[in-house]
Length: 375
Image (cartoon, rainbow, N blue to C red; front, side):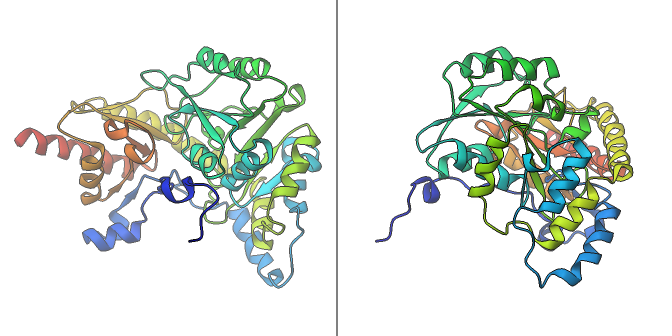
């Protein structure tokens, strides 16, 4: 019998993405325009218009191999963030860059530090590569507990993932604490600052920290604020070329196609689209916070600075999977806490989106509360 190289490849739990509108429409006979897709943290305004124009212009070049390092995209990112193009690596989504980092900088059996809960890809990929995830618990309301994280760094993990804002809670770590983490890390530990959702914090993020820390890589994605989730464009950046060269060598040779490079190169300069998106998300985050405050069986966990939040289930008779299915029946796609974290049966992750979708969510949760009270 042919065996896999690592048992986790067949024994582990795969990542669970958010459901599609098409699936929910067909299963529950709900019109597509009446479904609120709040389980994938996508952009409510769709893709960057500048990216769309560039993608159309690039269609005539898909018969040609792209530059194997995505040079045009690296140069665009470098110009946007004042970086050296040779200190940027691009991936088919940020998740591919995460996989590269794990393979390049941690040997089988070595430790990779992360919060619990965290973006599940960290521990899924670590396990599948035979690396050892080490978890640092968060606070009761997902406070990042920076001192506890710094204490764990004393064990000198090979990689330390820091997600800012945190996924799935949206909690934000201040720059002073990011610096504390970087300074506490051993020179042998690679600190990976994952800023997939940084735009929604209305801060500049940590890109400017790179020159201060030679063992730091910052990750970004164009899936969220730029609206390119279906194009698959992400990148990692460092001030240290010695961290980037191994990633170039370990990545699939032509991992970024002509269309990805063209769309991404244009999108990083589409400030108007990003600003419009962020403005709406921030306004709707405040709006839904007030609207959900009157519920009795559910509680919006405070502190999110992202385009999603955690909803705590206070009623012991309701599990996350039950709530997930009840929301689907009412045209709401959310994220079951059990697909995100251990003990997740008391939580849901829900996106912040346009007002009509937030109103539908508030109505649905109120309707579920009323139905529970009637039982």
